Length: 212
Image (cartoon, rainbow, N blue to C red):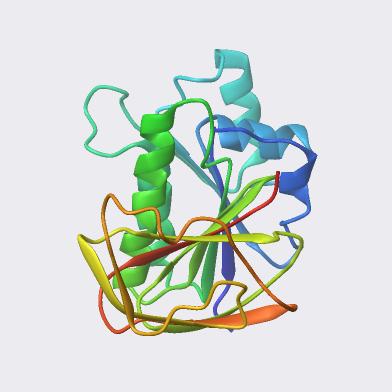
């Protein structure tokens, strides 16, 4: 069976992150995300990045505690550490990718990491960004989503326009609606039960499940 890959990168991390790691997962640590895994007793299958967010001593610990370490020059590279980890994960053809530590105080990095969901979508690999308050996925056709402790559901277009949006099982239903960038119509909907259905006809739709 293809592995599920968990990428741990250098945004906001905490005990919540450990709840999303299973023993059978293939673990990729990106930069200081690798340090987080090592410090919590995990052995990353691959640690990758320029490691400019860790000390020399921490990098030695990462190297000794990882099955493989891929280091690059912090100047001579085209991708962020998280994008390098995502592209590496997609090359391994996993059945699913979970990103933890992908959101944080640097909004530019957070937004860029959300855009990485489009890479996974192009490769037809389900991917999610998860932190203590959010679960973010990208929808291109139809999906059933479950509550899982995130009562709010917001829909935002990642493409210029998303058409044919139909919601079933939500407090505020939509039927063949469209969303364009700049609209907030899809913010803060609520599931009426444990699950609901979202269908679209075209475009890229971010589904953001959240809790305060």
